[in-house]
Image 1: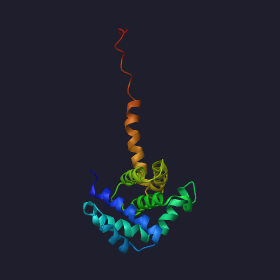
Image 2: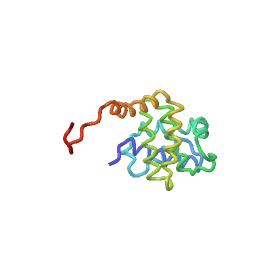
Image 3: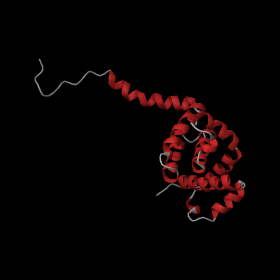
Image 4: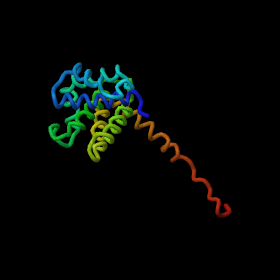
Length: 166
C-alpha cells in the first residue's frame, strides 16, 4: 500500500506532465487531478505545495538540474523531467525531508513510470543536486556510512577455530 505522500507525488507527476504538454496553471491542473480515482488517498496539502512549488520554480529548478545532466534538457523525456523537477524541488525547498527520502521517492517514481533505466539517471542527477544544495547533510550521511566500517578495521582478527593455538 502506498503512503499518502507517495500518492501525492504520483499525482504531482501526472500534473507536471499535463503542465508540460498544455502549459495549464497549477490551480487548473489541481482541479483535473481532484477528479481522478484515488485522489482522496493522497496528501492533498503536500500535493498542492509540490505542484505549485515546482511550476512556480521551474526555471530555477531547471537551472539547478542542467549542470548535472549528461544531455540537454530538451532531450530528457517529459516523465523524467517531471520526476527530476519534483526531486529537485523537495531537495531545494523542503529541508524537513531528508534528501535521501526525496531521492528514493524519485527513484520509485522513475521505476514505475519512467523509461528503462530512467531510475538510474534520476538517481545520479539528484544525488549531485543534493551534494550541491545540502552539502552538510550529504557529508554527514557519508561520514555516518563510513564509521561502522572504520571501527571494524581496528579490531584484531579473531583466532581461527580449526587448529590449536600455539
